[in-house]
Image (tube, rainbow, N blue to C red; front, side, top):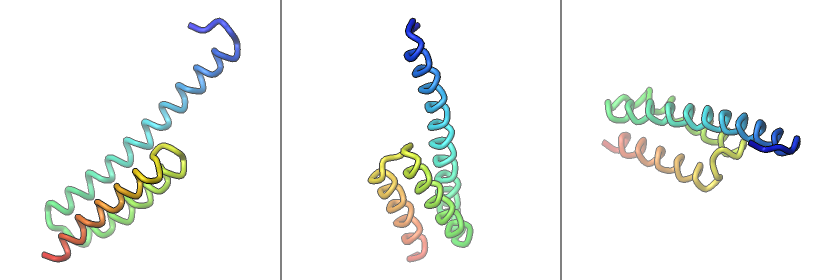
Length: 89
């Protein structure tokens, strides 16, 4: 454990940020799983709605710095590809 007051504060701040980042990442993963479940069940209407929701959540996570912007772009692109394959069927 740190002895210096500023170091103790830094540890507390890091723990709070870690929890917040975990919460955001977890919610993004949950939304992505719901989208993929809709795609696997060939539910086009639900998949379109969830793609919009997932894209919004991914963008917010990237804006907060939880996800890197390129990582967010890649995730959104892969989700869009899955939806496009479903529409093409």
